[in-house]
Image (tube, rainbow, N blue to C red; front, side, top):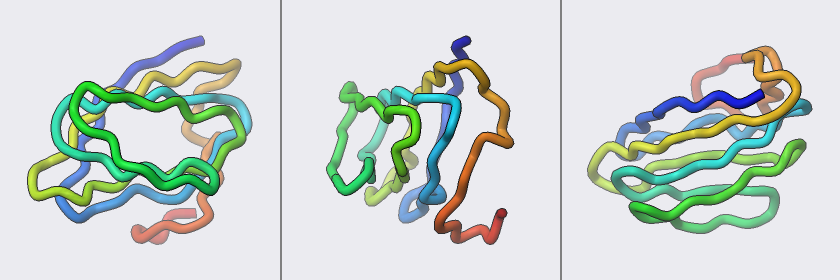
Length: 95
């Protein structure tokens, strides 16, 4: 299965540090700058750059820039449900 969606991250904001048991993700930066945590790596992506997040790998997306970050996220795997998110750190206090 595959699913694509567009995500927007406000300047200075970040998503939770998380992982998935059943899906991998591919992120493509459409606009802005992304700081990506993938396992032990932390790196920057700019417009028209992308990265792959393998199944089972901890990851986080942050916007260190001054404009909204827009990415296309392509999810692939046997199950794409939102309950396949294991959060390790979350500024929004979600489980």
